[in-house]
Amino acid sequence: MKLFLTIQRDVLKRPLISQVVLETGVLINVERAHIDANEGWVLIDLPEKEETRISSRLTELGVEVKKLENAVLYDEHECVECGACLSICPQEVFSFDADYHLVIKEERCVLCGQCVCACPHQALSIRQ
Amino acid sequence: MTKSIEEINLKIRDGSAVVVTAEEMPDIVSELGEEGALREVDVVTTGTFGAMCSSGAFLNFGHADPPIRMERIWLNNVEAYAGIAAVDAYIGATQESTTEGSTYGGAHVLEDLVSGKQIELRAISKGTDCYPRRTITTELLLEDLNQAVMVNPRNAYQCYNAVINRSDRTLNTYMGMLLSNQGNISYSGAGLLSPLANDPHFNLIGSGVPLFLGGGEGVIVGEGTQSSPSNGFGTVMVSGDLNSMSPDYLRAASFTGYGVSLYVGLGIPLPMLNVEAVRNCAVRDEDLITSIVDYGTPRRDRPVVRTVSYAELKSGQVEIDGEMVRTSSMSSYSRARKVAHELKSLVEAGSFMVALPTRRIDTGKRSHPMRETRQTPRIREIMNAGVTTITEDESVKTAARKLLRGETNHLPVIDAEGKLVGIITTYDVSKSVLLKGESMKVSEIMSKKVVVVSPDEPVDVAAQRLEQYNISALPVVDSDHHVIGILNAVDLGKLFSKRWQP
Ligand code: SF4
Ligand code: SF4
Image (cartoon, rainbow over all chains, first blue to last red; front, top):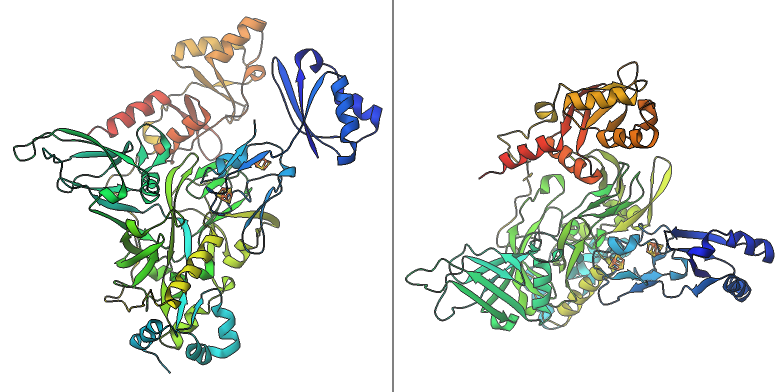
């Protein structure tokens, strides 16, 4: 599962994620990160069962933790099931079932945003 | 054995016609043989649902009071061609809005009309004795129009090239987003369901043949523009009443960085008259071969990377140079199926007849490129050959002097053999002087990644490249990477403004 971490400037300088990994022994995968002058955010992936432990520890350390759910917003009325998004997504979120209907495995999404511009029917957006 | 069109229509009328889709046909032919399938099947329905840029509609608005001869017309701020008498216009699918750019266009106007939405018409005129009015603004629904006739000059391509991008930059094209370094493959077309793939010699498809168009019943006008059946790229011109259509089968699209297009659902019922018709409809995705071309080359004749079957394209990945590359379809296969099935139900229900062409389409035709009487200028003709360069070991101070003397803002940096290794600008020099004084060497401050052009490229390529990289000059290098000139954005700008003067 994925957690979206928002980190304030004053906390940013500390090696938080490494600290949590060392303390808990849980292997965390950093999928994306963005840091600017005032704030930073990091998208991490971790085993489902470790969520509470990691979340509470990160919160203690001053990180705002949000579960990443419904990351890809999908408008089924706009979608025509062309498949333009299939090869664009680095995480293979999109695929076709045997009947060429679109299947979305949104838990894989890393919020790169690439599919949003690739969809010719403006059927995809990313939750802010 | 042969069947006549009258026989088949009689069966359709009394509800006993056997109708199958082009997807079901190959297996039927394998099982029953061609003769057996001919006895069994009366009509094969085809279908495709994809971006068909070459689409649009003629609209008649009726006369206003006082009357106006509308010379320029905008529908929801999308200009429609009005040079046809006083109260008609042709709205083309790819025309973009004057206010919303490529997010709204002619295709959206068509979809809005078909969806029952109100659109705004604005028009202007110079005013004449018989048509005194000069401007008009009004709101209209599809039902307010006297006629709304879709006429698509070029639809239902028999075959379409698949595309890949071997350049090092993501490209935004009408075939969608093409990732750099052959990151993906994009293709279009429904393969074995495609109408023209099931009648490659145009025996059954031609002028006057009824078809399913955008959810309604239309008719094939005849040969499509750019049609080139002799090399497998045939097209048809089609027409239908917008009032009979539905947004399920007519969808506006907007391709990032490219523009607007219209997705059209289109299907043609093919009467099984003889063994040849049956054989043609037995085509499978494995038999339909197209080329994968490299869109990284911005020219008309693009290199073919390899040929590929629709079966491979639909599988989701194709091997290129030993690597599996993922594919994306631009057209919708599930919707193409829906078209073929819908058409099948219509024929089965006796509400869709078949017909033979009243006029055959010339299958020997091959479309040729545009005759150009004036070659686009090449870089060589407009570059500045008296380019000042500097070597990597020289000092920043020398660079500053050269920049001042040469009245230029860019200095290509060369190595001992005269090959291009970097570039420095007035900005780089000023910055380094401010930060570190004049003591540095050129090689320490130059940008090593230089965007270049070659002397034989058309100037338009240079213009596109300057814009993409947001830079103002391009060193011109020969095949050995020697700097032979420089091209400035200012010179290019002058050339383009001259070229476009009416
Ligand atoms: S690209 Fe857009 S319209 Fe096409 S299948 Fe994906 S979400 Fe649907
Ligand atoms: S945002 Fe990126 S990772 Fe998420 S679905 Fe779109 S392309 Fe895939």
